[in-house]
Image (cartoon, chains in turn yellow, brown):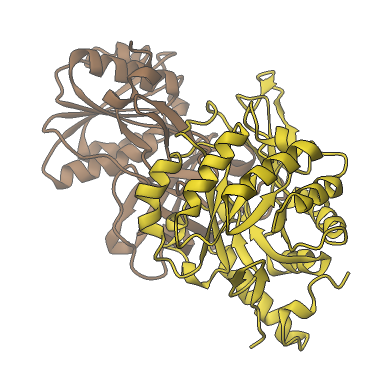
Length: 301
Length: 256
């Protein structure tokens, strides 16, 4: 058996496979299908200061090899997360990370501060890249100065591993990655969804209530691999790769491009057991290629 | 407990131009299924379709370890599913969502179009409790009511068609026997029909359950794409529905 263990800053992952926020609920939704403890980590859904209802239905549209969503960060809010959800999921023997979202620097800091108090949450993924909220969200992630500002403020109140999730909807993702590294991020994850749009020509209107939404699924993967490769060569902090991963070979592309870990998103909707299949596929690959340690192939491109 | 299983198609039946039924056999013992629950079907063989398709469970036969799906061809996914043949394999995630309560001593089941699908197994479940149902099926034309005779052993069957090609002419809510004489109404079908039936039931004080058919991605409450507006905020149709108490959907039905 090859060693699949990797590290993101202070977090040791038993393997590089994590789940992408917003595609895996709180993990519990998948417990009937897989042994959650086989995953390297679970990143639970985006959590904001207050409970949010998200955008109006319809907020999903299937597109070729992918989908658009405009959920808009529907979640129970940080207080309910800490009091009701956390006690249920803290016992799962894997790394549980919380995706932290907000509309203002104060909100990001307040949520991060409250999550910092939870002993079984070793890190957060700071979501400065959601395309589906009117205020904040992607706004912070598209400008290097604003990205650095929110990260440095959150850094002051959050002591554990701070991963910053980046948007691909920028001219240079490398500039944003460097800015958040400078501001104190321990890691960056990329890519969040790509801003997209689809029109129902029969009804002559957009499919989504919000008109535009975030594109995910296999169609975004080549863009994501390219961005991970660019960022991994530009920063010193570990990179977490995601975007259209649906099998072990996809995951390997990201690892070879420089990601220390990966997240599986939309593929969970098609096959709720896909994450465990990817873990097994990585092990098979290492055996076939006589690789003793998965870290030996990380960043080889 | 939800499962993911490869089923074998043991029967494929074409029901007119727009509908077909697939009877699927579980490789072992079929777990228990509540009326109104649904499956997420994997669609193979086309690059145009990535996501699974949510389909109501039309019938269940525990002795045979089979379940039947009644499918209307409406888009790319269902068009691909229509090409499946007996002997083919179909991967399902199931059973999903909350079904009907099977309450009431004198229930009325109102279905329209593909929404009649879950009502057959529902009528069977009532019958198993010793309750006879009244089943009111509606469609624009008789071709759009693909299953009729199968309901007859389970209660009194009423038909409405908008063009008058079968049964009474008009909407289901205009049928002469659509009334508040029942103690429980269950409905599934086009949104305007369900809203009309639900509004009527709420106004008359009759218990009513509405089965929604929102577009879904995951089917298990993870992606939050399929939400409906309820009086308690957005709820996932896949997880907290598809069957909702009409009293929780007043805003959705346009009742102030």
